Length: 393
Image 1 (cartoon, rainbow, N blue to C red):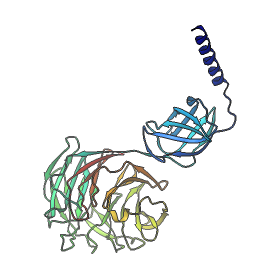
Image 2 (tube, rainbow, N blue to C red; image 1 turned 90 degrees about the vertical axis):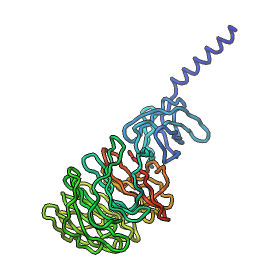
Image 3 (cartoon, one colour; image 1 turned 135 degrees about the vertical axis):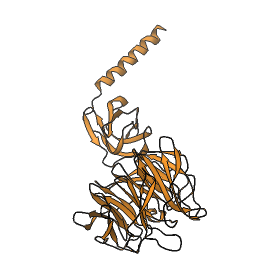
Image 4 (cartoon, rainbow, N blue to C red; image 1 turned 45 degrees about the vertical axis):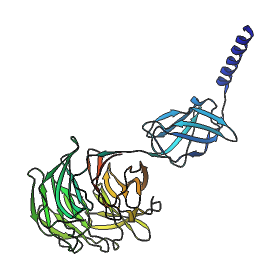
């Protein structure tokens, strides 16, 4: 027994000395890592050279400034360390530092974030609806349901997770209408009643739950228009096959045609507005991103985006919304359950958590307090849903 304890003591002493005497004079190298799409709390495997055999000496720093250390080290032909992706890590490059010598990953790691939560369904199933948010409440109006087109309006309260019926939209019931919000009022119009395009136009005041008829939308492209708000004015880009672009001034109740979109709109996706300019994707032979400057009344090609993440986007008709200054895309036809954000500042696509429900196209959405609410939608066989999902990035 005495000999055993003596041997154990000597072994521990030797390990301790070896640990203190480890000397690495060559900077570490990162040869590869797995996976490039991962989540907070998941394992990241980093393979390279010149990592410390003592895991706690390998410091890994992620985009977002969060640091951690590896929990294991092994060596075959290359060094391998493993690390748990810590809370607060963001998409981007990471670094490995060993004894004050640091190396960066070169390629970014995509940290998949986001959370979906199923909420109270809207009482009547629908797709091709319009939606908007005013004063912390969400609104969904019109659309096409199981028994035809709709003209109803529903208000959603996120604090109680409940829907309340409001005053119906005047005029014909409709699908594929447009909407935008200016100074606490919603402006809704256009669309079609499954046989005729409509050009009537109204404002809705949630304080009084009343509608007011306004000047008709003058364009012939009245269904599935895309809307923006810039400088307290509404902008509408006509539907597919057109180039028309119109401005609505709520102070004068007038429409004025503006600079035409540069190409005929084909599979046009809703864009977003950032820093006083509008951005919109248009699919022709390239994935072109166009920018509109309201002060110059002009469009220009902002970028050709070669790394558009999913080719099926333009036919999936997913839900598109603006959140945290980025454009988000999720939930579309043909099992399109991807969720991605697009950052205009660096033209970077960031993968988010997949949409967890059944995939539906032509859903509508509104944004309240940093979360998006995705409402309804349809399948290819025109099966409408009343599901509501809350997405928090």
